[in-house]
Length: 80
Image 1: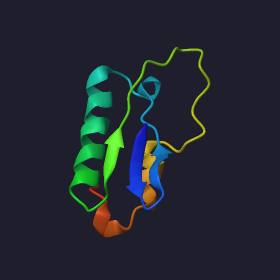
Image 2: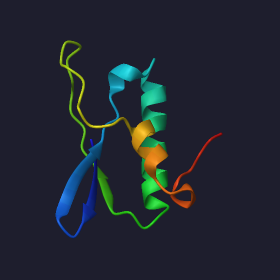
Image 3: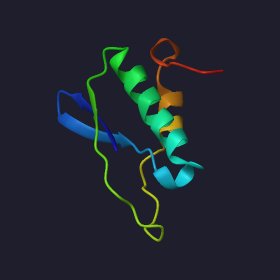
């Protein structure tokens, strides 16, 4: 779960759900990209990770990819 800090404290804004990736390498790449994007800009962020069972419903938070798309262009690190 990606959290960002603002004047209200830490806010949960997005998830990187490992079930959406074909393998661990792809998941790790998404986490690395998230850290690079958030750390490369002035957005205080932290990532919290925990195991999710295959039957657990998906989070109501947006995916990292959807959240990243809402960042101003200068704050994104697009691979495309």
